Length: 87
Image (cartoon, rainbow, N blue to C red; front, top):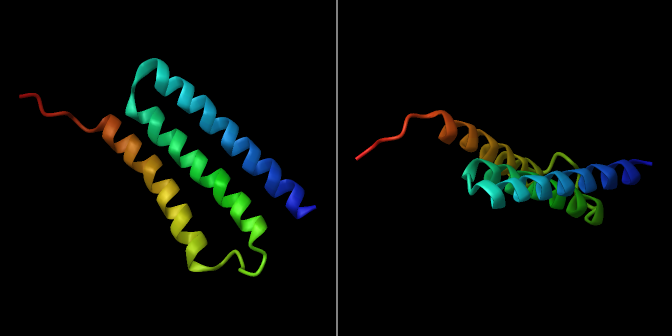
């Protein structure tokens, strides 16, 4: 049952990534690109976690991948809201 739910979460993450990628293609706003990359990383990480059953969910690799994905989201929000220098 856990593999089924993990697969559903991975599929949802990859579909959300495709939606953000479509928004990025129409607007060329890097905000959407960062979100698309973040959700793609999360979806692929879920698939990798199911394939590699020998490692637990508490291994450092899992935390680093999640840190990267969430860091992209934080960076996108900060980049969108910080004032830009005009020169």
